[in-house]
Length: 73
Image (tube, rainbow, N blue to C red):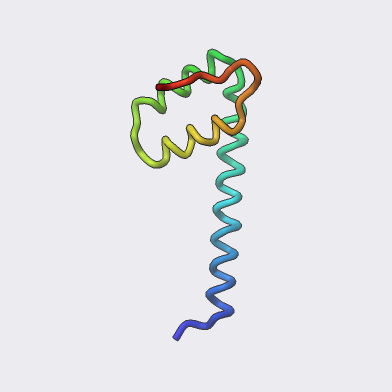
């Protein structure tokens, strides 16, 4: 039987690691803040259909500088 306290600690440690990873990705992707840089990154991501590529696209969508948003049909 698993110790409930250990399970809770593992859960929170995992959540912290996930949040840290997401924050690092968001910081790195923040450098793609011009229309040209965004178009380059979008072109790279469009060639991939992995869950990781979709995650990056979602981060980019959440942090769109004014006037840079592109729509993909």
